[in-house]
Image (cartoon, rainbow, N blue to C red; front, side, top):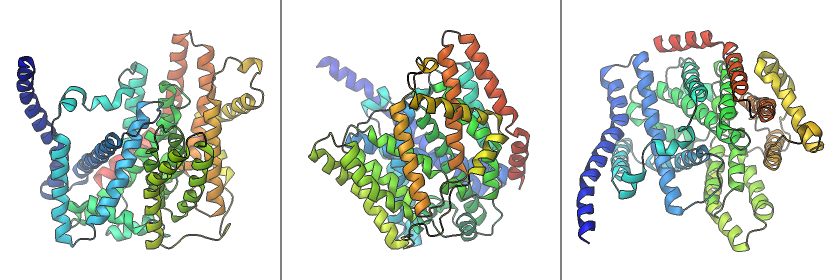
Length: 501
């Protein structure tokens, strides 16, 4: 008991230090971007990095909320990498903040402003309050153990990915206000008013500064949506490939010139054509659930999709019987009912969106058109690395049909998980085509091509697994191939022009 008393007395200085360090870091990411832009300088070269820091603050709150809900509900699931857990917590926290900020939006403007600051004060105090577990185990790096043991090639490639992602930021649309920006991003009015309410509260400190408000919303669409698209793509790849090849796959997608040209022609593509891959990853994640409480995330990821396209409602009608009768058929009846109960919260929010935005397409094939295969052809032809996708597709088809072929006998690939991936992808494309969702385009074409392009390299690396130096040279060669046809100098010019505008 005497030892315990001495130990408890020694822990209090650590608690105070932890609490104040957390508070300083927490409010620095909030106050520095807000007050630097509003009162010191609103020049683009300073406003852009400050807005990025503010977005990091928002993303951090989503992650911490998702982590807290995950901990309180004890949601268990199998993961292929630490990134699965990060992506899941980010989307979970974001969905809950969308709901909460829409509740704040019901109040008068003065109340919204006060509740905005009260919210962050309470959240900051809660997440900064020290517990023994936080002091001993928790740090920023503990959430990114995936990248703790990178070798020199992988660290270099990760740095290139981060640099290229920032340099690929498109020009900020020249508009006179957020309403005009809404029309530019969503001319057909598909995006729910709930999402715009969420953005309005998220950027409430800048609401009276039109230029900063437009910059914040534009940066949000690029940093958040395309950033989450790339991170989710990495998490998806980790179900099939090594960490090294997954980084190369993300870099190949990002270095494609189509990645930038899509943004130049259609800023709304950051939403409408990225949800396909996120939904597929979400379905694969849900099938690995070890707890019926994973249904909560399945419902909320569907709710996030419905914010941008009400036709996602049809996935609710598919997901309920699919998980109840197929994927969880070996579980007890009680388990399946509980899973459905937890997922019903997100499904109920989808119904709320339908009530507020009654634009559901109920006529099959109304205005539908088959996907343009020529776009995929041009994508493969214009980037040398993507030429490997044809070889990768041939290898996988051979593996599926003649699995015991001599040259594929020692090639290991998770065929069972790949069949699930193809099933969910085919399901999404079918619903998209039947109900004219218009989301299977642009970025929806790039990630499958990048996926298949990695298969020949995986096959080759398994064949020469003992020749480390040879694998490193091949890896470096393909990094250079991706970098050389990335139009790097054009991206830099656009980025400099964006900062100076």
